[in-house]
Length: 511
Image 1: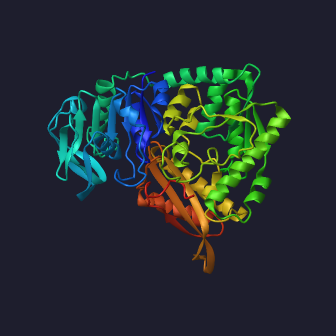
Image 2: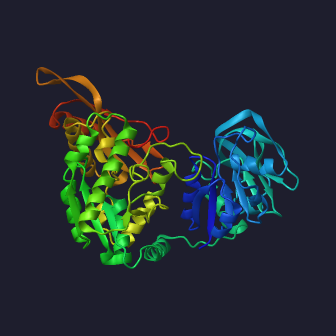
Image 3: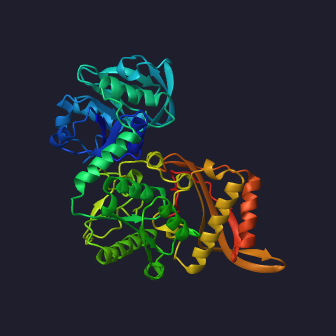
């Protein structure tokens, strides 16, 4: 399969480049910025994209790729920091800009060869995020476009297939950004449009069968969520009775989750091993307030349970998980210098002593791609439209210590939120909706008596792939109904608040 690779220099936009290319059916993946050319040759990419990043090209120890890639003959597109790498490597000069550019800017296109082919307008809006700019271009490079503050916002060396963009074509704020990436991948790099969920399923089944030995068996951890259920369906199709699924009740589930999971897998014809481990998980979390510690504790205890299940029902050689690409990126293990946002329990929380090989068939997919795959695999529709739920469960929706009281409040209040959204025909229009509870309390009035109860925060967001999200503008009367029901029906709640923070700067889950 033809592919484009992104060398990751620490930009949180790196994943967006992948998404945009996959949306036009060109396969793309992120690799470490310093991967040797010899290893890159084995992957055989049609083109290379150098991502943006927080570093300055003239700073000490700024990240650099293997210099051999610049003379490899493989087409290269540098974006932001990658643009500056290209100019610096070939003898140009980068300086700190007198006028920094952040946000929208007018891009004036003066050469529509290759990158800007088929773009009708002479001026488009682009998204800038830089403090450095090119002062002198290398020999052989021409200016393709400029902005009022950047005289070389787009440059190209046609003979060598080298291009640089000071702006970010991957973000939705850049007009015709997808067309620019399409031009690089298909016109410049000549990559074929071979990526689809059909091709992914075919490729995954083949890879799974190659990886799993004839006498080996796989233990698949399922939660009832779309990710792990899709993994189970994919593995069931690939290896059949060599798969066993285990569902662990860690006591941090949504209301009635246990029964719904049992019914789901029964409808799919997949048997599950049910383990009620809620007491041991809550005991391990007793007194723990730090969110990273909670995630790591839950991940370790999951591993303990899996090991016990493997011994009782084994032998097993593999543990399957529903890890997605955003999980890998946010946990800081994608190979690039990006900061760790938060550890996902199925990425960073598993201990090194786990004696099972891990297989993660979805770890190169985004959430919307998983949903498309699930639909093709025959996963029930009700699950396809169900909101995402984190692996650590309500532990990350409870700020501070996890207690039975706060669990009850978060669980009951979240059910009210979902129910009211369904009644108002909003549930399927939003990405995620739930209730958060911490240690803060406020004074309320019940009847004629003063009460002192918890503050519940409602979090409802719109998103496509969970990497970015915006808070949902619900009708005020719907927010009012949700608030009234929670304060009236959920014991020991005094106030209800509504979260209006987008991602970034916030995350979707509070912890």
